[in-house]
Image (cartoon, rainbow, N blue to C red; front, side, top):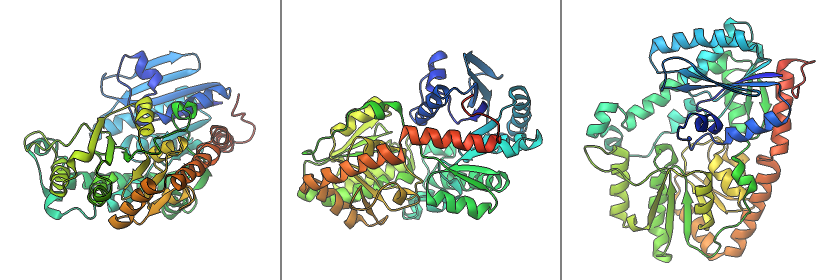
Length: 424
């Protein structure tokens, strides 16, 4: 079988070839890549956007063909990308085209190109998140004055909170058009299933769990059961709602003054009016006013090994996101047996059973969030049992490499049509 992928970032393998930094997000694609190659897939063409070269960059190694296409968000780039995709589709002649995500304009461009060359029926889109829904849940309880505040840096880049919310809305409209046109989607939660069917009643839905980064399958489970440390992922993204955890920490610190929050994805709050962000200024002011700034430990952008090391120092993982499909960071924590506390939003309830495999709380309920954090600290035996059950769920169901591999190959076989061997 010949397969073409469209990803938002290059494979780490390809980034290493060009001597470029490896994106922290999207590392799970490597796991799916290795599973597909090991299955005997005849050839895999992986397309990804790049801003380094004006022309397409091509790297070939055995059965892998990596194509980095030039991309900007200008209309002429969109139109030229459609033409480029059509030429690539005709050259590769794939049995299946797999688009990872719906949130970027080039994803819609690939759908248009596939329709133009007559292979839309062999094209599938994986649901990562749904930006059309994310736009509705973007910082709903942040004060209006903060939403409209703008630093000097944001004036130039047009990236204050209201601009980010608008960006989600615009990309959401592209997403709705894409989902209305596509014939196959691949998802993993009842939440993404419901919304895909809402946008397109006729779409064929293929259930496939997400394969995580290889390091989390190889790592031995374990965490710091007696610590009072909390792991929080991607703290710089407003949709992750770190400000809720900051509020909860005011309560937690009264009983556990040594509690710390290890925050990945940011080196700290950039609160300068000149070079900072209005969101960071809000977080900095909030943590200072509540007296919790000293409990925040910033880890910056860390790779899989760094995440594992940090999680091992913690007693629990916390997700306070206002919306999620199924956060990979929570899946990675569950793989290590780290007890998880997460907001009951989007597809999160499909990841774990409340009070058996994780603690799930109503988003925005700071009192309940702080209660579950303190429960983990006060009842380490119960927390361990929940973490262990969550680990079994992650390793055997949600993120089982063998199950996900079979689901992926089964979907490819169905989409390509009978008679096409996904492993040949």
